[in-house]
Length: 139
Image (cartoon, rainbow, N blue to C red; front, side, top):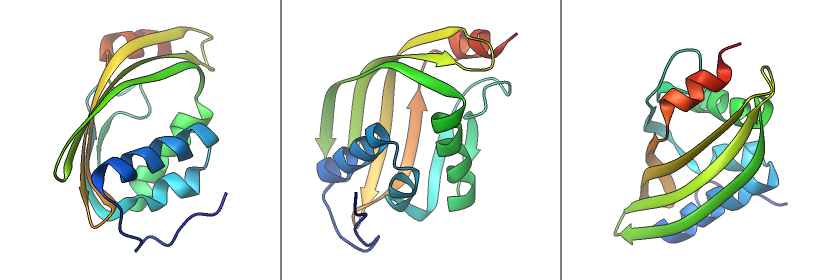
């Protein structure tokens, strides 16, 4: 898959679609290219869950992507609805992941708030069942 130059300008809905297409394809570099150089990024949750916490830089966001690719095996990932209002997008869905270190399954509904400016993600806020995630990562 060819990753377009980061300066390519897409609308909010297109940017969200590109992000999820690259996620589904396992294209970590392509996913990272969709984020701006500075991002208001946070996934609330327990420290035992490697993708939680605030992030801002490409290096920090790369850690989030790496965890999503290496620490879990996705069993199911369904986007139910994408709602767009100008630069803001809300994604609703549900997933099931197997935590490779424990073999436990983590299922959750999720809501994701994304803001897009000039075709790149500048805000990423993921809301999931953080208790279930912590339980799945606990040996």
